[in-house]
View 1: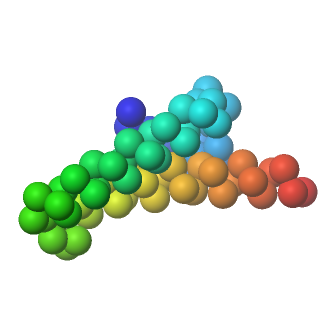
View 2: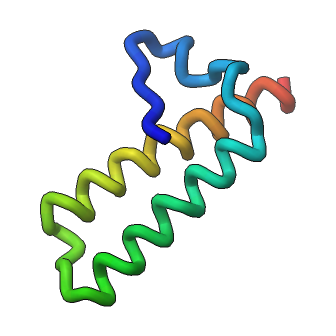
Length: 70
């Protein structure tokens, strides 16, 4: 699942559940582990792309956490 956003406030979209968010993050991490095991370097285009996707999910989670705290 790829989450595309166009505006800052879109990052905390409510249409993706917490479970789906966590599953997406775990999937990306597994793909990264597999790529490294197969010899991909951490700076390869594929691993960097996965890292950027993971960053999006992490940002969504952080924004949601900030909303709960405030």
